Length: 238
Length: 124
Image (cartoon, rainbow over the protein chains, first blue to last red):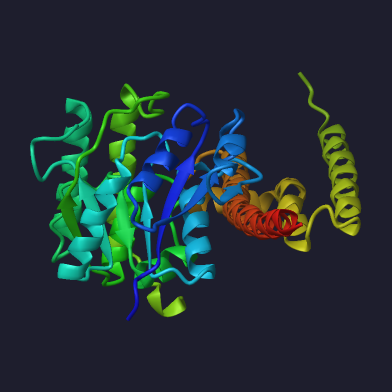
């Protein structure tokens, strides 16, 4: 087997302040990663800026994070990539950390490898409320699915191999995609592991999940995870 | 006070005919499907049955243990509406999924075309 082809999927919405620095940072990693920016119907100049630096898919309508990431996964499948790695377009995920995910895959080839904020204490760890929410969701995943030892189910930095690409190109949640897609993958028998990575606080823009929305987010995700446990598998349909 | 029941029947009959004509016309123009026609017709058919056959209304009332027959009638209409809403919700969700899929496929296709144009322009 030759050098695996790695695609970095960057979903973004109105990230004109961060996208250029992020794409330049990926180039500076000198790892031969290919990139695809998925512009989720931005109203600012994200498309114009990113178009100069990377292949880009401009979604004709805003589909939300789930729809944007799935478009990137479909691109990876159509272009026969071995791995795709999702990172946020706001610069929270240092792209050179992707190598840690690939290294972890070489050591233990799990279909999904999550870049976790909570395996070590030396990185940006978000607010207290979010950590509690994330740990509650992780607890639900770990209890409902055997062989699951997840600490950071809401991390937007993760590597997917061909098997995960094949599954998610067909079935990917549109709402709250990170934790729910993990539940779906575990239900289908895909293996998931984590590796500690460094993350940064958001440089530009604000999170859309604030205040009471965080509680609503957690409850809805828990509901979806529980339902995922009960539904039939879909891998045979792929 | 004397209530003229025949005027009530007439009012319901006029409403039933007009409403049936409206939804039949919409179905003929394919703005509704035959299932919608059947379900929406219940808004007319159920009150018509209750008015035309009061013994059915009283029988249903006894059967369900509801004191007033008109409450049974409204209960049945609400149940029909619930079924319609349920079906519409499923339909909207399916349309939303199809729409999302279409946007993704169109956007991917556009990306391939744009890349092709970009490459051919740079060659020239």
